[in-house]
Length: 153
Image (cartoon, rainbow, N blue to C red; front, top):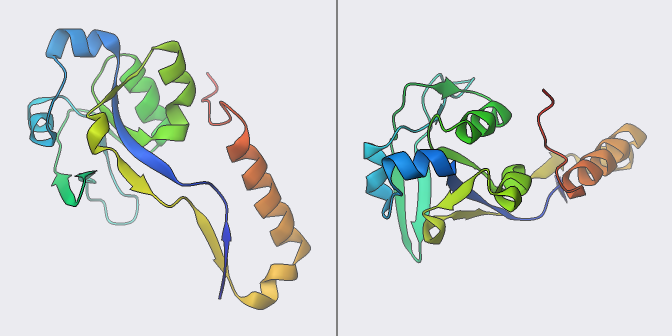
């Protein structure tokens, strides 16, 4: 089995729109999320809602957040967070532009969970396949571009 890195490491972060945070306050600790409207994410395979995973030092939290809106797509989740409909737990590269412009703010930043990035695993014999090399090159190119994950409206 061969692994090929597709992306750099990144963080999962909690974000909210300035309007939402002004109206509902900014959580200071992971447990505070239980008192906020959170945009929850449902697994397509299990049907269960994801718990938000936060960490600080060696301590970790799995917060079973709740909210009235449930998504299975990170771009919709980001768009709804920008509209002030709740807090979102997203991959930091997905919201790079929104953080830069201020339409979203990081929340609980000291608790952001680091992940090693995405990898593709394949049998060693598939490594030389032209379609696989093209796929890897395309993914790397797309994820390297600033704002590449923008949602088209």
